[in-house]
Length: 476
Ligand code: AMP
Image (tube, rainbow, N blue to C red; front, side):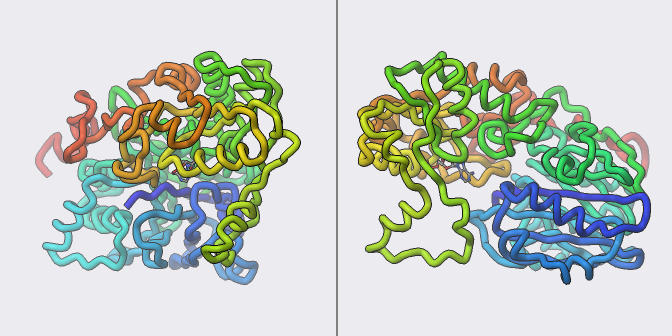
């Protein structure tokens, strides 16, 4: 299952209502997941959890928040995935064992989860969900029964392969752990009275905190009674930060690995303008994903920026979809055209990515119908050729249009006058991180971890060698 999610953990120095802070942080991370939300807090004696399906605003109200008393806790928002959509798969996930209870929230995807699960099941473990987070929780408990905390985390890291930004709640302690490749983001910040660890810095901003830095790949952060300790448990030569976080997933006002996402996207837009100029009079985004890229294209090309499409942001989960013969109504309800900005104009239509090609085709046809004279589509990522196994819920290889068609082929399907994707080099330069420090699996088909049937970056096949292990140094 591919989980692109949002996680947060907060520890206050003094008694306080941590659930409220977590709730606000989850609101800031809502773009990372709209399917389910949950919060776990430790009230001094035990862990209380509230989880539900839907948006943060639908899952929590004042009464629920006030029941979650405590000064330390974690939270999670879950992305709609191709996996099973059910409450059992929502998080934080709580496991109880002989020495206590652990709540865990996970952003990422393990590539060896089914093998690990099979091994655990063979020795009697019983699973309640289909999520790989439960596999992590079971493995962690097993290691905690044999080792101290740090060694248990190291042992866990030796077993699980894939992307994981994890927050654990164990008694009065919050742990934040980022996988040795730093695939999914995780950062931490200082609050007036305590610390926060979160998927994106917008959560730190929302709590009026101060971003300290990203959690390093392979680093464990321990927050206890408002104090922070850090342990570097793995030392890989190259990280593999997810390129799609920069292109699409993270919010433009977040700072990832020291870079403001807004600036990165303006840079990508500028690269697009250099690499793919067009005879046009208007640069316009597909909202919201194309907005910052279009700003960059406009600034570099000096072609006017005009909004031509308006998105309705209030179509929630409970919206009753019109039936087949009202399809057109449904489409127009989601996105409408600003006709005078389109009629007789030559447009440069900018978006972040083409996955199946449905969005681009639909919108090109929509602006043509509204009278566009020409539609030049510009895309802020190179063609998406291969599936993501590491946490972005994209599509299978069969569904990816660029896996089966050439660029002129895609151009024809989406009915554009011209189609330009940013180049690999343009993208990497715009981000400002060397290509060897990025995961570009979806753009190259070469992954930073071993996946059966897929190509792997040669230097990354011995991941385990770079993870510390005290117990491997001498007899246990
Ligand atoms: P498609 O219509 O399948 O070509 O998808 C492309 C559109 O989906 C673009 O407008 C993107 O902004 C958006 N998109 C790309 N990746 C994702 C994702 N993982 N989840 C949701 N939307 C996405």
